[in-house]
Image 1 (cartoon, helix red, strand yellow):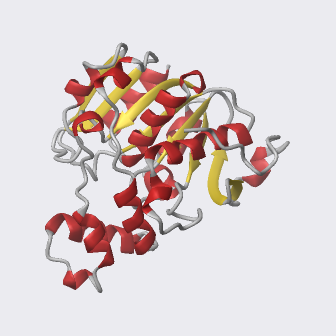
Image 2 (image 1 turned 180 degrees about the horizontal axis):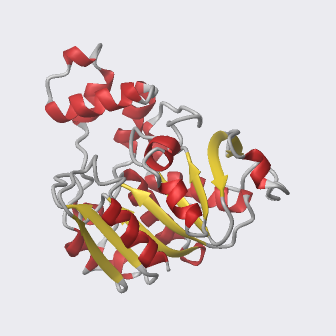
Length: 269
């Protein structure tokens, strides 16, 4: 899939620190993408999971503070359909490769040649697609909350879309659907946009695609995660892959885990 050049200027602000606390955004192929950009040093681009936002996934669990405190520049976007970014209602607009192009366009917008990239769950899938399409732009990858399901399945069932489109939370009987509907309501998400997203972003990489990801890759999955699939099985397919089991954490609670954070800092170092 061809990359799309952003409509906004590629020159970054002269004083990024002046913009902290304010919403930054740019436009890629008619889609407004909101992002945060904090700290100094080598950049780390953060891609959040389904139904989350840059703040819910990365700021509130302390990742921005952790990374900037370690001397890194933390950049996180709201994926299309999420947070303050444009809401789209065609599932085809959420193909994983298209969402990866938004991240590439963000790098272009900030005039960043390459970066370390970390994604969680759906964000990890997007990170993998970015690395597959643009390996020169990705120095290393952290795939959080996504193991072998990158290859052999997409993890979250499409039935979650039905839960998001139900008339109310009380009308949702599926337990997993109820969890995600409640989470989406908590984050004040556009439920129809999220339903389109989960229907449209269900792509996988092949074993051969994984073999082509030659940059260092950490695969980190909670020990109680029943969504992501095995971290070890995916890491074994990657030339420079390593697996991390996040002890005692499920798919939702692994995000802000201390063991996960320290392992990522060690990996990036």
